[in-house]
Image 1 (cartoon, rainbow, N blue to C red):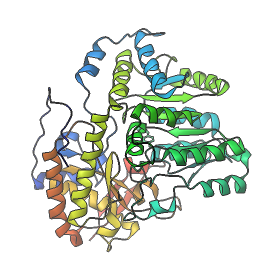
Image 2 (cartoon, rainbow, N blue to C red):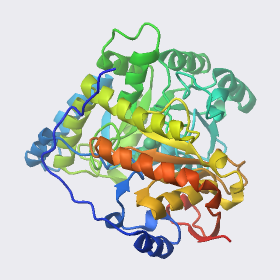
Image 3 (tube, rainbow, N blue to C red):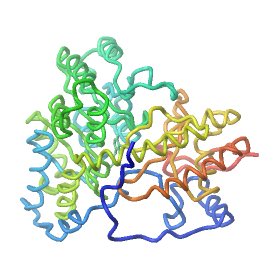
Length: 452
Ligand SMILES: *Cc1c(COP(=O)(O)O)cnc(C)c1O
């Protein structure tokens, strides 16, 4: 295989501040063993999230200079909505300040006590918004997704039989929408096939339930479809993206992912009556329908970001760089969610630290050790994020998310070296205990102490 090079060169750089292990030890304690509490200047390689952390292109930056800041009907809004219409075929396009704002509006409209929302896997903010409305969030990803070492080309697929069983068991009237997350972030950044989306659509049609996508990474998902799905290899990313959205009645999108911007979101709704109610809520809480809590320049950056993300040279570089990290960690002995996902690598911390039980948070323990060892910031996706409230213990994962167009291969090689050293001392990683937690999304602000 030929080296796939970054399809860009670097025009502007941001220095990284080096820290010593002793400094990091103190910083970690001051942050109560929660890396969300660490200042970004104290992080060497920040793999906390790929959300809003990407580098914008020169065309995105120049677009910001021509942002039309008119309150209503700004040019920038039309450039943004024309681009979204071109890619998705949707006519009713609402800008929001980020994905969870789209979610909050959607679930205020369709959620509520007694309602049940199926999804392959709800992302943390999606689950929180569903539950905040009083509804119940149910995850129906295929069973293969529960075994990290098991390889499946579309490990994000929804179990269509379980979806049907859920609808029959709960009753159609309790299920206002079905959601599918592409790619499946909480399930390892794994793609969903067009075939699976069509099957889900057929079940939705049979029961008359609308299908909504959580489409934050629709372009990465389309690239996997092109690579892996039968009959899709010769098609363009744009065609696959269009097919994906054609199957849906609506979508929530965080533009901080495949929109390649630092802030922004989208809400797409086909049904005119529901769209009108969404407009009203948007105006109430985000802003007028042509800016939705964003500035004109943000809309310009989104319009250009959505244009750049569907380019194949970008996507092949993007998916290959994530895969590279995954292959190297596997070779060191880490169990990751296989095959590597689109935007991130997920390490099975439960397997790495079998001596740490779920109530001592093996994922969080590994996150802390990675910071202490090498200044690398990752995030726990396990018992801290999804545990508590009587939920069964999930997989204990640590996510290494790759910001778009930010780090080079030597940054990633540094991460791999640090992981190699850490692997040798894995039996000395210490469990944690929660000493404070807030009522929602506790992983953002929980405090811990180290045990033993
Ligand atoms: C990031 C994300 C969200 C929420 O978007 P924000 O912009 O962070 O509010 C929702 N769903 C998925 C799958 C995501 O990755």
